[in-house]
Length: 89
Image (tube, rainbow, N blue to C red):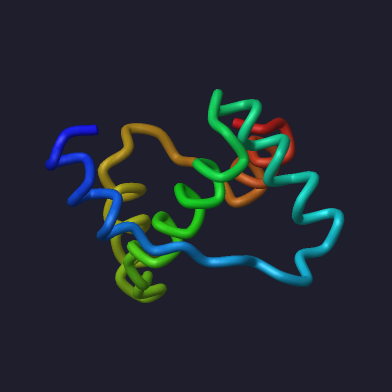
């Protein structure tokens, strides 16, 4: 082990997750397989993604969506959007 690897290992923090539900554990394992990661690496990825997420300003998001809709060359109705969402688009 190189000195650089030792320094990195010494900086790593370990946590234990207790009381996780069977459903959450199963889903985490499924995600790990899907992403080709170990369960531990997937848990780290999920945690890091969660703490790095940016809060969403709903009003700004709505304004941006409305501005985008206004630039479209054809009219899209709320019913069409709902149908597309149900179809998984």
